[in-house]
Image 1 (cartoon, helix red, strand yellow):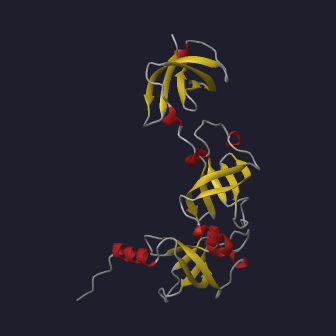
Image 2 (cartoon, one colour; image 1 turned 30 degrees about the vertical axis):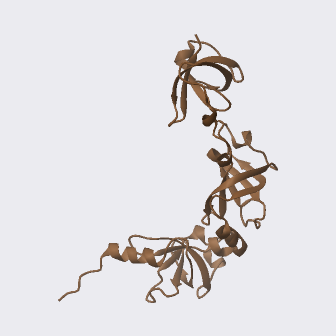
Image 3 (cartoon, one colour; image 1 turned 120 degrees about the vertical axis):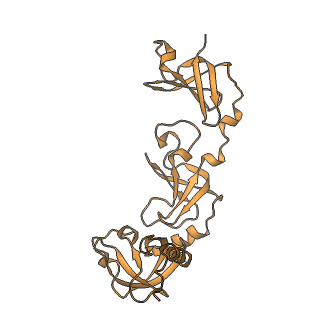
Length: 267
């Protein structure tokens, strides 16, 4: 009787159980792939063929032209499991995650929800790097802490520099520990009071506030301390307004779930 072919799904489940994401494994460099990947014979895994792969971009924090500059065949290596390829059962590894031992230890002992303080090291349009107090120096980035733009403030901003500047001291809450990128993702907003919780005005109320932004489809007006609403261009009836101008508006609609306020000029 012919034995039934192994169930690919069951095989994948076994591989996922044997190599959970984030687990640190050791092995031996067995060769190099066509795209510059490094093939690894993992300790305790199938000895017939290499079943671990380190993609080129996960090999090292250092710049290199050829992976042979970083590792050699027969070299022992330590890497973190990043996933398992569904089709082949191949284990995807990150040697970069474990390359800087001090950084890896720091990331592993940091916990989501921790409150951390640091100094803004660099501000970019995609986010802010922070040198966290007590962190080891990062091998590639200006700081181990990173703040995504939506996590900077509840207020509307055009650029992260509208919220923070290099050298500024900041305190935030850890929301993600990312060994893949080697960074601690921090939210300043998590420790700030939500301005919508302080919004006392309701539908039909007339309030006055500064114009915070002029866009082709209308203008945004601050309502209360920090919440903002939109006056659509069609409701302005040709009225010209500029940023900073005080404008009296009537609240037409408040959608707390979508965090949107629709305004109209006061009668």
